[in-house]
Length: 349
Image (cartoon, rainbow, N blue to C red; front, side, top):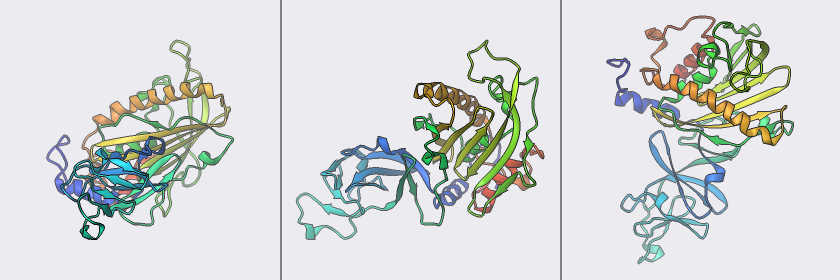
């Protein structure tokens, strides 16, 4: 489906297909630490308003709407740790989504249709994950989270990017933009390097949708140095990247050790994406160094954000349309990621 121009809004049909294709996958919607005991939390996933709450000791996610007159349940309160009370007329819903109390009515007078849809939810890596439709999809792996040899920094929520989720995955998966988008940090414009792909199949996609891209390249030495302290000296590092439909984990190994950037993306809408990130490293492990790493990562993200928000069309054009001029072997990881999206039915515009 081709839009009239690269800047045009996708058709309503394309947007609906995009949302439908992503509903069976797990998506992060909030940090667990941000869900209060006595107050529900409003989130939006694929333009669908949801409410997150702690009820009877578990995280519950439901449609953020009261069945009575449609008020947002997130404006209400958690009562006794057991129910969400609507702020409009006091209707209360339990952890299954069923209305269990209506003021001025006896329990036996509660309509059987007085209930809201509850969705699958799971807490992992300090995040609340939601799956809007049942499937055999899996939450992305993050083995370093359980490895005590890695120092884990704070779980960070970044500013929303005005771009579709695949654009954010591809921004982190692209391995030939370093010299131009991150000069002096991840690359040098005067010394661009072609990644040395590792193995007979350097880019693979598993049956359960995990893309693995391995390569060697050279990065500037001491990239976190203050301005004026950097040099044109470079050192070889190895990247082992893992991407899914909505996540990207960069594992970078050099002489000092291994650092990990675990990015997971929440598609608020077709053109707005939220990022949750945790950094892990098995060197330079002093907790007081966490902020240096956070600032470094944020600087890289801001440089990528400017590019991703400028890209059009909003959703990727079909490979067969050749509206994007991929080149090989440079763009091999991006080509394989887009092929995977097309296989699972994520629509192209």
